[in-house]
Length: 335
Length: 292
Image (cartoon, rainbow over all chains, first blue to last red; front, side, top):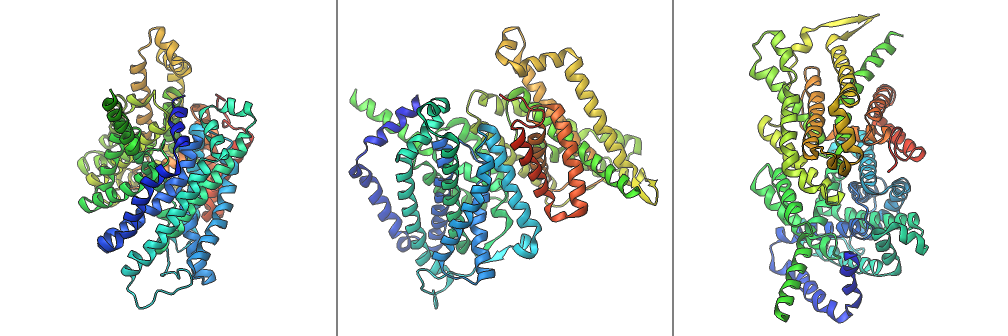
């Protein structure tokens, strides 16, 4: 019941009120390469890419109520698609990479989704985890195709048909490529916003809140879950494709299930009950991890402590907690 | 023919260890409905503790003393389990499953780094016991005796656990709590205590799995994560929360893996997952699972 109350204000929110928030944030993101150093800009590009993955992940967890612990599979599928296109087809164009990735991740998610959406709750989580490990083991074992743990190198791609020559790579990544990522990110946010506020998105939320009632209303539950799974996988795959040129290298680590756990971590950090939660979570997580890695070699345990404390004390995440604080402050003022 | 016997022994060796890990995972899920993602790390911890006890701290002791030291890893894992359950897991039983998975994932991240901190990044082995026991002749092949000991321990553990759960008073309480926690609580069962005990036993089994394999192979970082994923296949095939299922699942995975490794090693994991997927499509709750 409470979830219905939470999503109701989103319906009444006018485009003007969204613009009040979105436009200044977009302007800030657009000027970042000119005010921050290239290292921080590249970190932000990583954050935005993970935000796309988080958005994709969250249509399953936040809107359909399915917790996937295997989203690294789709991220890695996207990344490896790009690497294969470079190695075997000698493609350089980023647009072709994205198209190829969409096709490849659709195939993988359709295959995995067919099995996984038959289940819900804990079984869904275990199955997605287990299936993602199949891809990981294949990438690991077929080293003559995938390069094994050495991975595959991916050179600087052509953006919109333009070759980035004469520039050094850092400058390219922190300017031209950053803007490319930003544009894809904005499009992804827009598309996802439309999806979750469409009748399809509402149907997913109905399934999440009460499966039996949703079935009574005439929603074909398994088909809706399957489509949500496809959308989720493709978004995450696009994130993987954008990530490869930035990272320059793809290894089986992009497919391993602990990375899936990191995607879950990001979404919960931001708050998966909110549309913007995974975006905020991904950007914050990326800076947090960057800080932790620079601070100690045992960064993983530091992140583990953050995760345990987070789920113990702030289960609604950053955005959820912020909204709660704002709502409390408003109520106090009106009294 | 002899090579078949060797393969069978290998499969049973693998089955024993897998049963200990997956059985613990399944027991914990069966009683408290939590999938413990840190379970594999407790298996690794058992391996590391036994490896340092046998190979470093008491390396000079008599071999009889060393055999008695093997279970130290299991007790260490059990102690950590007994400490974790009341502090970090108890607040999550009434919360959605996402949070339970996440908190155990956080524990996994912490435990993996704690092991890296204590034992460093290099493999740790304690092969004296393994070498001391020598090997037996199977036709023209030789097979290490220690591996046969592991198979025996795995089988004994399965029998003890079965007797413990189906033949003792504590087992009755455990099963009652598993079936209906509220009613058991209303009838006077101290549910919190049962939860600690079940979690501790589960962790003990995982630790024992790590402890008994360590004389035969080294303890390495990351072994826990691999073991967790394999035990997921076991419980998916056998049915989550069922000990019979864990036994049969471990046997299926043990046999299939041995077959796959010896014929087409690249597809080892893929074959296992394929079997798991087929079982799930035919029997959604696994071979021995309860459909709830």
